[in-house]
Every structure is written in structure tokens, then in C-alpha cells.
Image (cartoon, rainbow, N blue to C red; front, side, top):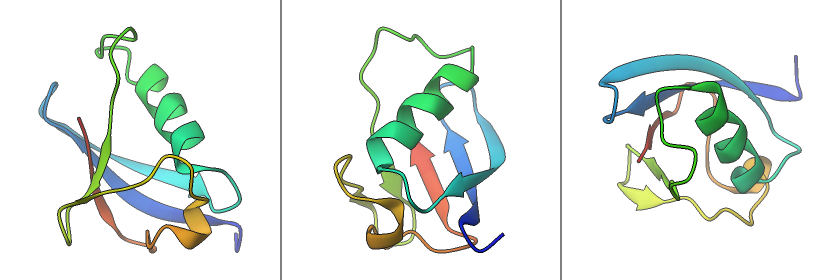
Length: 79
């Protein structure tokens, strides 16, 4: 599985963590939308952002995961 990495997504809206394998060849915005839709507790009409918990920086939606600085085992926050 060289084309996927395992990350932990925390959603404060539902106060839960999810272990998710994400492909490195997709844009962060695409991954964000898929994860938001998968967590059916979230309001699908809202805009969400992903924050890297390690450095507290917002991850750009238009960057591919492989170039985003997200590494295997990263802890991300979906707001």
C-alpha cells in the first residue's frame, strides 16, 4: 500500500477520532469532501477545513496529499 497513508482524523463536532487510509495521489480537498460525507453526523452543507494537529496549520485543499506535508500516522482535525 505505497499509494496510501494512515491518518487519524479528529472531528470536534462529534468528539470522535477515525483512523482513515487516504490516497496520496488525490487533492486534500477531495479527501476532505469524502471524509465529511462519510461522517454522516456532519452537516453536509457546511464548509470544512483540515488542520494538521502537529503544527496547527490549515492544509490547503488544492495540494495533493503527497505534497501537503501529511505523513503516515499524522493526526488531523476536521472542522
